[in-house]
Structure formats: structure tokens, C-alpha cells
Amino acid sequence: MSSPPSTHLLNVALRPGSPPMLLAEPDGEPARWAARHRDALRATLTEHGSVLVRGLGLRDAAETVAAFRELSTDLMTETESFAPRRTYDTGVYSSTKWPSNQPMCMHHELSYTVEFPRLMLFACLSAPDDGGATAVADAAAVLKALPRRLVKRFERQGWLLTRTYNDEIGASVAEAFGTDDRDAVERYCRTHAIAFQWHPDGSLHTRQRRSAVVRHPLTGRRCWFNQIAFLNEWTLAPEIREYLVDLYGADGLPFNTCYGNGDPIDADVIELLNGVYEAHTAREPWQAGDLMLVDNIGTAHSREPFEGPREVLVALADRVSLTDCSPTLEVTAP
Image (cartoon, rainbow, N blue to C red; front, side, top):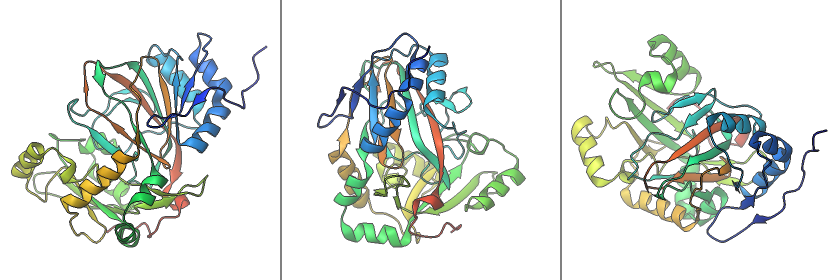
């Protein structure tokens, strides 16, 4: 007879500067453990925004996929990705391919789309020699710490993401939309409030305006929910930004963010945003076998620079519509 589901989690350690951590007592079958503790884990996630499970002993992709499926209501196929990933199984991917010496700053996954995951699942199969933590930051605390005048502007105008898809930097059209058929891409853009333009060289330029602040559909907390800083040109290393501007021009960068009315965001504002994120960052170095759950609306996450091999699998789960999160402006193409 199988054990009944657990409704309470013991030994959840809450330490300043680190995500909540649970020391698991596995039975050799991580998926069975995940199924038994599913409800308690999700309750912990709603309360704390993230939880790192240590000691579960995930060993390979097959075990990870099975555990992910026990913990989620549905696994999403990623659309509008900003960089390539390896696909392990339906809805299960590698971490985004991004230079190991460059940070992936705090962000909320797919916060520029009209449907996004509420739950992010991470599993470490191989920990790097140094660095590489998937750090987290409380989105409600970040919002509260930001200057009120700046927040009011973003609440009123939203934020604008511009993208220029090519086959050299970031995700290609086919990788982002699952097809390179122009008619299919255009249909997707029209139904997802994305303005688009094909350039003579065949590249695609898109613009989409989204709310910077949303309300969590379960907790009701107002959250700073966007990728304004991460996808902005001023977050790039200076030499990389200079190279891309020289190659594509200031208006042809693979991605950039602006105020919702199209005004550029100054470098000092991006520095301020990243500084507030850093002040609210919690981090814990990965160990092989670790599992981490992150509430994608209530908690931002990042990937820190690292050295040595690193294999972290990712799943996007529990689809949520932007319209269910009390956006501060109507979802329309700019």
C-alpha cells in the first residue's frame, strides 16, 4: 500500500540570504517522493515563493522528467524564447544557452508573453565548479523598494520589448515560434498582441507592450513582474553592447526594452533596478541532485556566472494568462 500524501513539510530551513531549503529523505525513487509531497511543496511555494529540495538524488533526465510531471498540473511548450535551449522531453529543457561568464540577471520567465508559467521547476544533474547559482528575489519586496515615481510611470505606461530575430544572436524565428512559416508567425503575433515587421533581409522585428506590475492570482500580492532590466541594452557587458550596436545598429539589437510609450530607459534606471534586485537576492550553490521550485509570478530568478560543467534542467508549468493577473493596462499591440 502506498503512503498517503504529505500535507506538512518538516525541516524547511529559513536562512537570511538563502532560499527556503528542505532536506529530503528519499526512498530511491524521486518521482514517488515528489508525488507524495506534491501538495505540501506547492503550499510551501505559495507561502515562501521558492523552495530548494536537497538530498533528493536526481541522477538523470528520465528521473527529472518523471519528478517534474508529478509536481505540475501541465508542462508548457516554450514559445517566444529569447535564446535556444535543448529539449529533453515535452516541456522539459536545458537551461538557456548563455555565455557562462555572463550573468542572466533577475527576471520572470516569459513575462513578455500573454500566457506564462506560474511554476518554474529546476533540477541540477551536474553542479559547476564555482558559481552558477539559480538565485531568487521576492517580487513584492522588490516592488516595495523601488522609487514610487518610477513605479507609477511603469504602471501607467507599461514596458515595451523590441526584438529583431536573426540566425546569429539569440533565438531564431523558427526556435522562438516553432515555425519559420511567415503566415503562421504573423497569425501568432496578431493573436498575442505583438506588432511585427519583416525587413528586406528576411529578419523579423517585433514590438510588444506589457504590464510591469501584476497581482498574484493566488496570494493577491502586487508584484514587480517583467524583464525590463534583463533584456535591456544597458545590462549587457559594455563590450558586448558596443559590438552588437556596431553590427546591427541601435535600433536593430536582438532585444531591448523601453518605457511603454517608446521612450528609452536610461542606464542609471537599469542600474537602479539591478541594484534593488541584488539587495533582495537569496542564493544557494547548486549540488548535484537538487530540485528547486520557484513561483514565477511572486519570485524573480537569475543565473549567476560559473566555471566548469553545469547541467540544470528546467520546466515551465501551470500556465497563467496575463488577464488573470490584474494587469495595469490593456493587452494590445503597440
